[in-house]
Length: 103
Image 1 (cartoon, helix red, strand yellow):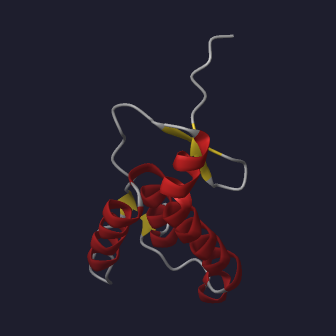
Image 2 (spheres, helix red, strand yellow):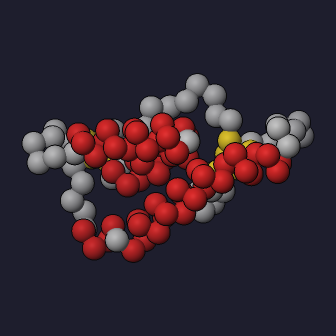
C-alpha cells in the first residue's frame, strides 16, 4: 500500500485519536480518578481504536463503558492484543504505517 493510500485509510482512525486526546486533556480531568478499571475507559477506547480501527475499537470501548458501573469488580483490563501489529504509533498517538525496511 502506498503512503498516500495508507494515510487516507488511517485518516478516520487518526481523527478519532485526536478527538479522544482532546477529551482526555480537557474533559476527563474534570471528573478526577473515578474509573474502576485500569486503564481508564477513555484510555482503553483510545488504545482499542489505535490498534483495531474506529469501528471495532469503538465497539470495544462501548462494551467497556457498559461494564463500568458501581457494582463492577474493576481491576486491570487491557485491550486484547493483536497477533501482528500492522501499524505503529507516533509519540502523540497517531497511527502510521510500520516501516518494514531492513536496516
